[in-house]
Image (cartoon, rainbow, N blue to C red; front, side, top):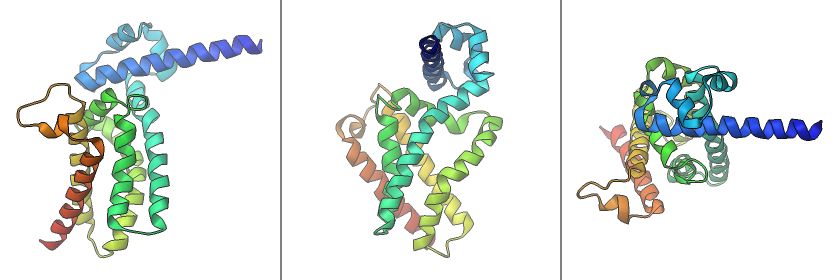
Length: 216
C-alpha cells in the first residue's frame, strides 16, 4: 500500500510539474490573457479536469508558476542580506537583492529563459492578478527598504518608491532582453558580456540612480 501511494504521489508531482512547465512557456511567450486553458492542457498533454484538480483555474496555474521559484529567490536573498548585516554597506545590500535572484532566474536548472521572460511580462499582466501579488511584493521588498533606510534614514516614501520602481524596471528589462534568442544591432553586451559583469553594472547603475534622485 505504501509503495502504491508513493507511486501515485510521484505521478501527481510529475503531472503538476508538467502543467506548470508548459504554462510557464506559454505565459512567457503570449502573456496571461493570450493563453487559454485548453492550450495549456494540450501542451502538457493532460485534460482540463487535471488542471482544475491541481490548480483550480488558469489563475491558480499562473500564481503557482510564480510561487515555485520565488521561494528559492527569497531564501537566497535573506541569506545574502544576513551576511551583509555583519559588515553593512549600500552596495552589499543592493547586491544581496539583485545577485541571488539574477543567478537563480537565469540558471536553466532553476528558473531559466522561460521564467525570465515570464517575469519580464509580469508588470503588464491584468491588474487583478497583480493585486493578488501585492502582499508577496511587500514581503520581498520590505527587507531591502529597511536596509536602504540605514544609509538614508530621512528618505521620503516617494523617493524610496521611485528607487524601487527603477530597480524593478532595470531588473525585469535586463532579464527579458537576456532571455531573447535574437541579438539586435549594437547589442554586444547581450552576447559578449558575462553574467557577473551584467550584475555589477546593474548594481552601479542603481547606486548612482539612488544618489542622483536624492540630490535633485
